[in-house]
Each structure stands twice: as structure tokens, then as C-alpha cells.
Length: 381
Image (cartoon, rainbow, N blue to C red; front, side, top):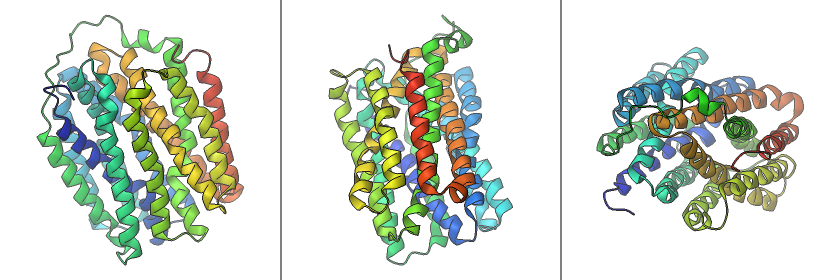
């Protein structure tokens, strides 16, 4: 790591953020199901998390670029997300309370990661190839949380205690945000190219549309994978281990990516993740009775998320420079994880019963194919 880079504190923040995600994504739908909500309601509640990403990161990113104090904004968003989530302790089962709390919590929390990506890249300056060495600790946090939660739930921790676990992790994340120093880099106030001018580029438009479809394809996986496995007789421990396997594959990829960048282009990584995404969703949809096929599908998480995300962050960093840095990462989060994630959660919740899980995951494979067709002509050239 280069001198002057607070690698441990940056890595620690990623670990905390994705530890929260490691509870929310695999186990929150199971919690919602146990307290009496049906698949359509679960789909709506889970859709609020990515839905707020459509506008939340862009608004907070504009504030960060406007003030030049991205880290200060991050400290506020982490604190406000903690306060908002604690509203759940007033009524943790009512649908209205859940919707209001998840909306308020997500509005603040969803702005945190894209702003922190900008802060991390500012700390690294031109050594952006070192990004994955820091970012992999987020995957470690997700892996540990998924694994540990699967074990403790099987050993008797009631699902009703999940809100307390998440609140504790949110408090830990806020404390770590206070410990991260501000980067020394100062972006020039003048704009060499307008934001609108960047967005009009064919490569940028194609990239954003393809990135959005990647997350639409992930929608049924994030919203219903745990429920899907539970319905097919998998224990909480086995479900946690399958989630953990996917993230372990992602960690290995992030560890090796700095070497891979020298021999494989960003374009190849991005397009390759789309090809393998088609295969992964078909394996999950039609191979749930085969443990070996599910294991293979989880290993492909290294491609469908790891490769896609790492390549995307670098593509955004390359296209959005100077005063547009935070806005670029925030816009990527808004379009990809916001709009794409919301659409994925909504369609999977709406058609989970009507179509059946296999055809919902087949539709996810179709989204990956469409993303490949859009990205192929120009993205990364």
C-alpha cells in the first residue's frame, strides 16, 4: 500500500458496511416471512432498499461535490441511518411501520457507499489498482456475517432479534466513519466537461443501461434466494454456507484482480461477467435440486458481482473526473443498484408465485443477455 493511505481504516469501513448487508440481504426476507408477510409484501419492502438509491445517492453526491466535504456527508448519512432504523423498535411487525422505517433508513444509508468509493479513490490517487485490496474487506465482512448468522440462527437465536443485530452494526459503522481521515486531494472548481456532456457519450449511456440490467437480474437472488432454498428444505446453516461460498469466491477474485488488470482489459472483465451471469441464473432456477449445481452457481458470484462491480467502478472513475467524481459514483449507484435493484425486487416479488421461481430466474438470465447485447458495441472500447 502507498504511504499516507489509511488502508486499515478504509478497509474497516467496508467491512462494517457489508456486514450490515450480510444480514439484510440473506436474512431480512426470512424475518419478514416469519412475522407474517407474503411474497408480494416482501418484494415491496425489499424493493425500498434499492428504490431509494434512484435519487438518494445523487442528492447526497451533489451535496458532497458542492461542499467538497464528502467524508463529513458520510458521517451524517451513517448517523441518520442508525437513528432511522431504530424507529423499528416502536413496532417491528406492522407493514406501515416497516415501509416508513425502511424508506427513511435506506435514504441515508444508500448514499454512504458511493461517497465512500469516491473518498477511497481520492486517497489512492493514481494507484487505483490497489482499490480491490481494500474493497475485498467488505466482502470479508459480508462473508463473516452471513456465516455467523446462519450458525447462530440454527443454534437458537430467534429471527425476531435481527433488528437488534442490524442496529448494533449500524452504530459500529458510524464510529468507523468518524475514524476515517479526509483525503488530501482537492478537485479543481472549474469544469473541463459538463456533466451532461459526459452523459451524452455512447459508451457512458450503454454502460449505465447494461449496469442497471445486471442488478435487475440480481433482483430475485437478493430478494428470494434465502426463501427459495428454505422452501426446498435447506437449513439456515446450509443457506448461510451457500451465501458465504459466493462471497468467498468474490474475495478470491478481488485479491487477484490487481494482477489480472495487467493481462485482461476492463471491457473483457465486464462482458465476461454478463456471459457468466446468463449461466448462473439458469443454474439457480433449474438446478435447485442439485447441490453441486448450486455450488457452481455460487462460485460464479465472483463474476456476476465481483468482476462486474470492479470493472464498473473503474469505468466510472475513468469517465467522471475532477468536480464530477462523487456525482459519477453516486449516479452509478442510483441507476445500477437503485433503479435496477428496485425493478429486480419488484418483478421477482410480483411473479414469484404466478410464474414460479425457475421462470423468474430464467427472466434474470434474459436480463443478462440483454445487457450483453447493449454493452458489446461500445462499452470499454
